[in-house]
Length: 334
Image 1 (cartoon, rainbow, N blue to C red):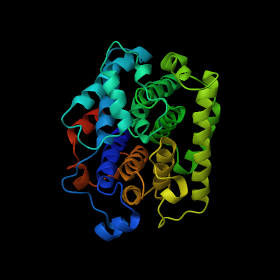
Image 2: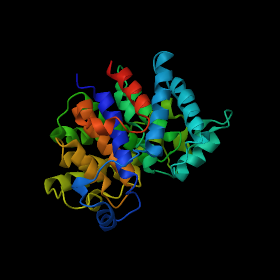
Image 3: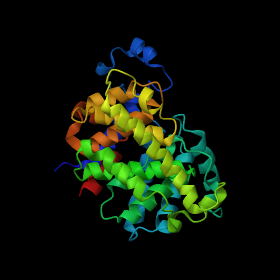
């Protein structure tokens, strides 16, 4: 069996660990300190960042929600909110997490506060979608459940419509690859999905979130997000028409600090090397932008496409949180 869920989660964590030492550094500085990018090695110890920690928090929340019955907005919000707050309070939350996640999770501690009041509607940071891969892996969800869950988990912290749309697209990409979509067809299918959903606001999952921004209607609110995602897919397609593997991918699709650019640059690194998952991770880690988030997304896409066998055993065996990653992967692969 391909074991796409296990491959996705291990790949995400490996990319996170590989990109952890290179984040905030220029490409020349990375090359000067670590050598040629095609030879980057997994650090020892292979520690991850908040990207993997929050992916696991979301995964645990999804597992709890699924154990209680069919996935519903309330059934998902409660356990995921609790997991995010637990992460916020954890002594292991010492990996330089983003300010948006910290502010939102601080507000989410008040269980009497509607989650929409905690959501940071002005932020579309990549924290919205660097953790969303589990939503693409849970079996048995309808299209509406998967889209709603992807957007709700993003909105708990990052309430900007582009954060919601990019998270939905990221989960959809993981699902398509896990189900066997060929990499060459992926961008076209993502573009079609974005157009199909451009004015679809998931009221049951998002409630009145839209009214907390400056938009006249919920359709206008969510369309802003999808339009920014469609624009970055244009840049991705242009980069793939004239590929330049030795150039920093951030030059083509952005540095990845914001959600739509993290999605596109992570996809670019994967699609430059669809049959060479370790090379894709190394390319993603040697970037001028948010290298750990770009690499964790590239790893998730590669793992969903190729499965657990994509990753060197010596790397997979020493990644931080390995036992929990494998447990969730085995659950969803089964």
